[in-house]
Amino acid sequence: GQQVMQIPQYQHVQEGEDFTTYCNSSTTLSNIQWYKQRPGGHPVFLIQLVKSGEVKKQKRLTFQFGEAKKNSSLHITATQTTDVGTYFCAGPLWGSSNTGKLIFGQGTTLQVKP
Amino acid sequence: DSGVTQTPKHLITATGQRVTLRCSPRSGDLSVYWYQQSLDQGLQFLIQYYNGEERAKGNILERFSAQQFPDLHSELNLSSLELGDSALYFCASSVGDPRSTGELFFGEGSRLTVL
Image (tube, rainbow over all chains, first blue to last red):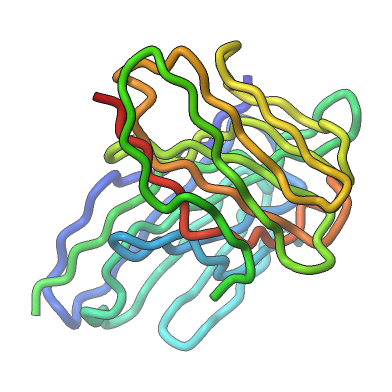
């Protein structure tokens, strides 16, 4: 079945260093979403990418959707302690009923040392 | 505050018991999703409802069932509980129909501990 894989599972960085998490799907995705879950919190939507090769920026965060729409990445420039949390990518799996259930990757947990 | 309400926030019960988790979606959202998050695990999709009808099923055990009521709130029933069912159960809602896979708004979750 369709899988959405994320690497790395964990990343420890010094404050000010950059961070990147990668997401790969076994099938072509119609879109991909990114969520952030702070420790003890719930996932919060960050962004959705739809177009092949799309790049979107949110302040220090840069999101990319691959040309083949099978991979995506999230890059954080100059990490801050507020960036701590787990970052999930999620892609829709389309069933026979044309219903898209959102499948999440395993997440990348970012720790930032001040 | 996402606008999605889940109760209870915490629940401790014994093996073999049955519990019901409740979710009220954001006002106007017709789709409700249930996800299970075990310790250090990702979000496992369980089931999705749209306007009262089941639309998609994931890795939901036969001991688990769910439904969405006419007022759009949803309940997840977990029976014959086992230790391995201990997890954080999230409900999420979205504004669009299931074909759009728009942004999900998550509740704060119900943490279930089975002893």
